[in-house]
Image (cartoon, rainbow, N blue to C red; front, side, top):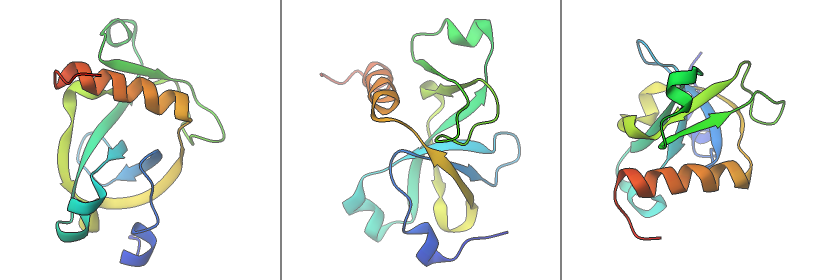
Length: 118
């Protein structure tokens, strides 16, 4: 089930969404709003299944399921695996929303990945 362009425009930075990809379908998106108006590509952080090994990686952010985030099992936001996608073609469903604390943890992990100053 595809969403209309109008529904897609309502998504927010902290939304947990499903994207139509072959292997990883649960993604958390991040994008720059000015750029996004002209180009339909957004950077996403994939959300994958939790494991002890993945949880030990500094740039992975642990996420527990809740009604607000829409996750159904313990997961990891894998900030090392960011990638661009065309949101017009791939957005399937907005699942939930992350807390500001969880977004801060993801921001910190991305600062490490991209070697950005605080």
